[in-house]
Length: 134
Image (cartoon, rainbow, N blue to C red):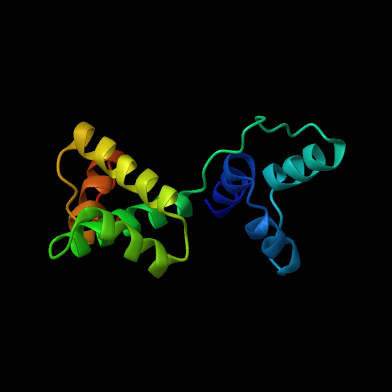
């Protein structure tokens, strides 16, 4: 299972840190990992011209948008955006992008509920994961 995760991170997010950590550990390397390394060294692993956004970027944007909402409850939205930008060390344009992403998310899926347990249970249901031990 870990090998699949390492491969997915390398191919989809261009994140080679898990692969490097695996190589430096004393863990056995699977055939899939060997194949990935060969593809990387031979230059066969191709990436799209535009780098896809990392999962972490989406998480950061979510936090920024939620913070703007929190700040906007007692001040104008423009001031809330400026304060959030200063707080996160980003531009106001990034804050606007984050707010737009949250708005698009809520248009598709309904209001965002920051209850992590509920989100975890929804993901488990979506992927057919049960808590029962076999």
